[in-house]
Amino acid sequence: MDITRQHQERQEAKRLQNRISSFIGDFHIGTLLNKSGIRKLRGVSPLTLFSVIFMLPFAGDNFYRGIVTNADLPFKKNAAYELLKNPCHNWRKFMLALVVQVTNYFSLLTSDTREKVLVFDDSTYDRSRSKVVELLAWIFDHNSGTKLKGFKLLTLGWSDGASFLPLDFILCSSAKAEKRVQGIKKELDKRTCGYKRRLEAITKSTEHLETMVKRILALGIKADYILMDSWFCWPAILAKLGSYLPVICMAKNMPKVFYRYQDQWVTLGKLYTRIKKRPGKARILASVVVETKQKQQVKIVFVRHRHKRDWLAIVSTKIDLPSEEIIRIYGKRWDIEVFFKMMKHHLNLEKEAQLRDYDGIVGHTTIVMTRYIFLAIEQRCHDDQRTIGGLFFACSEEIKDLSLIEALQRLLTLALDKVRSSGAFAEGVVIAMIDAIMGAAIEFIQSSKRLMKNTALTSIG
Image 1 (cartoon, helix red, strand yellow):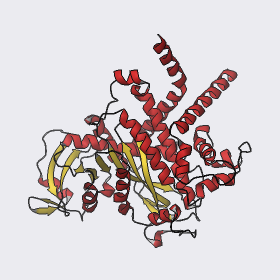
Image 2 (tube, helix red, strand yellow):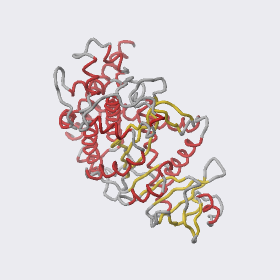
Image 3 (cartoon, helix red, strand yellow):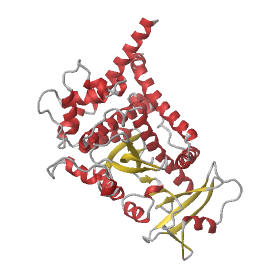
Image 4 (cartoon, one colour):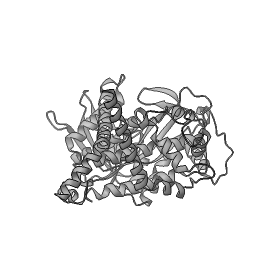
């Protein structure tokens, strides 16, 4: 039995290596690295270094075991560190070039009438045990309600309802110098990517949203809406981003944010008390079109809270969109929550490498996001029969989008996640979704050869 199990493990590892090699070759990772200024100066090639770091979580290793103390590698640890820490390496250009290819591939599998969305959110990058990490700052964790040392990972993602891809990110420190534990340590040329990244890190995060959207749209990535959490739901932001794409976001009752209703300026809570609700136990309680301080008309949809005698509010800058559609489309924002959990729990974002250099952390985060892109492709190939070949593409139906009920479930579970104190229920839901994604990806890897063999036999028959 031991021999059989060892043989199966070796075969699975070999199939996984083949799938990763296929991903690196199909999407021309080496060429993208070269075009992004990540080139060989001496010793081993950047593609070899990238591939070894990329493989670490799939092999069950961290940076120390897999690289620092690994004597079987054709390079030393300094080569890997230099790859990540070089301030001239344009990791953003690499990642954007990669996701352009992947989104174009996914777009071929879905119809033009299907909504594609850009999703904004941020998450904590915890470095609580660190002291000398460059640009380390005190940040507030909204989930736990406590302060910790680390960064805010502001991320812009893309989703078509079936697959989610990270497009761009900024590792934010703090705009206030008194909240930064460490400052900028490197003396850099102002023309380098590293210098520009550091300026982004110490700028208020909401000032990056418009720049990130413009950068993505300029690359030709198609989207129909921008989805955001309540932390970004400010009238000025809605007006600014709404000039590019319609915005749908969660709203919360804030004392300094007012909406004009029947010629009076009221808060969100006051607005809810004044409008007429649907009778009975309707999930959608009410909807109303109001005006913001930016003289912009928005539609607010109030939804019944599933676990409290309360309500949730969703704001849309597209006022002619039906309430059911607003809720369904906003349900696609849940994918970015799963993305953050996957990055931290399975792909070793925070614990794999204890880097102190800001450039190194940015480079490592880019590679971790590339791992997620790889898994997203594997999951799509597993779930979508149209990816198997031309005959399957012609005969198979397009993979289903979110239904209204599924969107409501995601929305209400997300709301519970934001207000929970212990986190037991919502955490279980998130982990279950993550396990399903990982299981689907691993199952595809294990069954790829068998599937290809059956397809070949069918074609011959």
